[in-house]
Amino acid sequence: MSLFNNDWKNFVEKGEKIISFSEIPAKFSIIYSFFASLFLTFFVFIFYIAELGKSFTNSSFIYLIIAVLFFAFLNYLRCKSFKYIITNKNIIEIHGLIMKSYIYVPYSKITDTRLHRNLFDLILKTGSVSISTAGGTTRNAASPYEIKFLHINNFMKINADIKKLIK
Image (cartoon, rainbow, N blue to C red):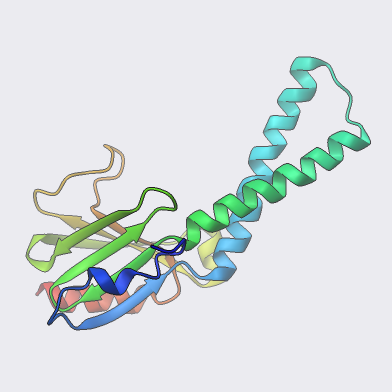
């Protein structure tokens, strides 16, 4: 298996027709990763200064830059690991860098879809599609959806395709 889940074709059953393939676009991954890492690193350094009483020096600034780049790189890799496949039988989500997860949802289990856009989505013209299932397991109580197509370019088309397939 490769780092970016390029093995996704192995998880489509024989005889299944691929209707759509989506992933988080690079522009969203880069911008989101940078801002998320900058936010995290900022609070770490504020804690460092406040708790230890250290002043902000040139070496602290270098560590800050290294930390931002490191966290941005990790977030970018995490974003790029998400793949979404719509076939004529299932919806498949593949994600994970080290431990990969593969989620299959047959159309007979889908009860609803929802669209969502945050500030980054509006700026970058992306969006998310959440798919809820009948009797499906949840990832956590706050997120009862089985699969979320996160921050994809073609979110309106994906939502329309799924709605057609579940009717």
